[in-house]
Every structure is written in C-alpha cells, then in structure tokens.
Length: 260
Image 1 (spheres, one colour):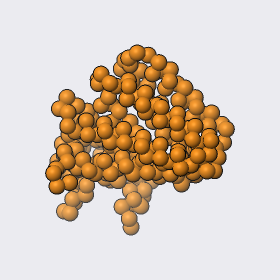
Image 2 (image 1 turned 45 degrees about the vertical axis):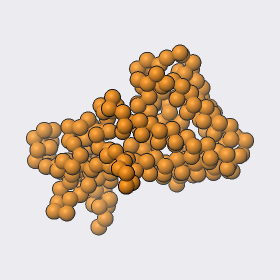
Image 3 (image 1 turned 120 degrees about the horizontal axis):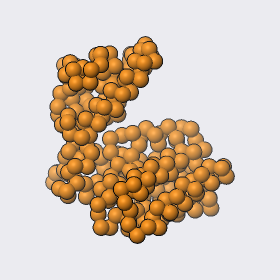
Image 4 (image 1 turned 90 degrees about the horizontal axis):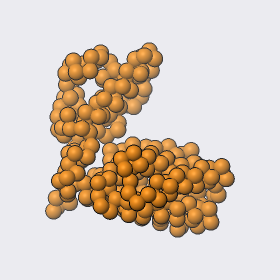
C-alpha cells in the first residue's frame, strides 16, 4: 500500500472529530516548523508532540504523514520523521516549476477561450489590486489584502484554462514548500521599493489576462514564466539579507554554494 493510500485510510478511519484534530495538528506543526520552533534536521518525537499539543498519537501520526507529503518533513530510515532543509536551488526549482505550469495554464486559456463569468471574476480581482496599489504606500492591512488577492488571481488560472487537471496541478505545485505565489512577497513588505515591485507584478497580471482574452497563447505563457522570476528575485533577497531572517521558514533554506 502506498503512503498516500495509508494516509487516506488512517484519516478515513477516524471519526469526524478526529479528522478535524488531524487538520488542527497539521496546521500547528506547520506553524512550529516555519517559525523555527522545530528547526531543520530536528527529529520529531511523537511523544513530545503528544505532550505539547495534548492530543492522541493517531491524529499526530496522520498529521506527520501529511506534512511529509507537503515536503516539510522527511521519513527517517529507522522510523519517524525529521524537519527537512532545502537548498536555495530546491526552492528556485519549485518556483520555476510553478511558473512553467502557470504558463501552460495561461496558454491553454488563450487557445481554448475563457468563459465570460470566469474572465469577469479575474478582472474584478485585478481591479481590487489596482485599488490597493493606488495608494502611495501600503500599510500592513493593505499588504495582507494584496497577498490574499494575489493568491486568488493565481488560483483562477486553473479555471481560466478550463482544465480540471491543470487546476489540480496548480494546487499541487503551489503547495510545495515556498512555491506558492505569495511565499516571498512578504520580503517586499518593508522594502522602500515594495510598492514599485508590486506594481510590476500587477502589470504582468494585467498583460497575461489581456493576452488570454486576445487568444495570444504564446505571449500569455511567456508572461507567466517571466512573472515567476519576480519570486526568484525575492527568494535571493530573503536568503541573502539578514533582516529577512524572521520571515517564516527562511531558516530552512540553505544559501546556494559555489558548487550549485
């Protein structure tokens, strides 16, 4: 039986309340990892998690398996799990993969045409981002709203493509550690150029939607691939600039070595 099937059976066998506990434990453990409470390489002891979170071992075991599937944990040869670390190249490759899949989704949307209702939803999302960026500077609340809207627009690419398969692949790649569209946007929050960078990203959002509407498949794909390069830039900034050390999860990323 595969690990995924075992996880499905383990979760299905739990009562509804138990399944809810698995999700809560999963979220709490993820927060602990990204906050550095469980540092890279740390072995996860089930009993210590039982004591810390006050839940039984069954939902903890299921949550640990889910976090392995997410890529935040790795299974150890002798049993148990340890917190993974990631090379800068690992994260850069994940971001590039997202850009490739988003580019394909944009091309399919342009070539196949888009339902007017979905196109209108995407336009409304970009209109709300424009309203945020019309301000000279973004406060914390505005920046948080930008992150939500940015995630929403990227999530709509699956619907725009008209392919349920592409939608699932976009969700899968966005769930990879540090590969989500807003994973490194927070790096810009306190930067003097923060609003300028978001304006550039928004211009690319608008360009790709225009390309989709005008049935320009190759152009739409190229724009989304280029769009992912902004995330690559933010990754380099997060890893190299000490003032971003408190950004969630950055401590798990190893700086690129000369041999990489």
